[in-house]
Image 1: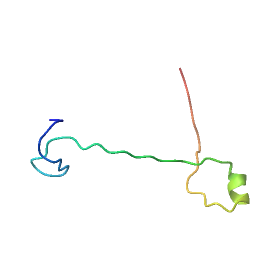
Image 2: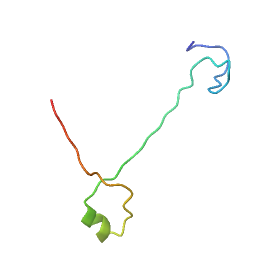
Image 3: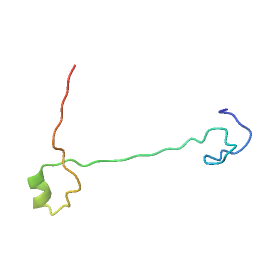
Length: 53
C-alpha cells in the first residue's frame, strides 16, 4: 500500500508502504589515446555495439 501510515521498512518481514529516493550517476567516455595522454585509469572498455530499428 503506497499510503501506509507506518514508516517504510524495506527489509522487514511485515513491510508495506513506499520509500521514495533519488539518485544520479555519470559515465565519462573518451578515446583510449586520450585516457593514456591524461594518465586516467581505464576501468572498462566498450568492445562492441549494435543498433537496429
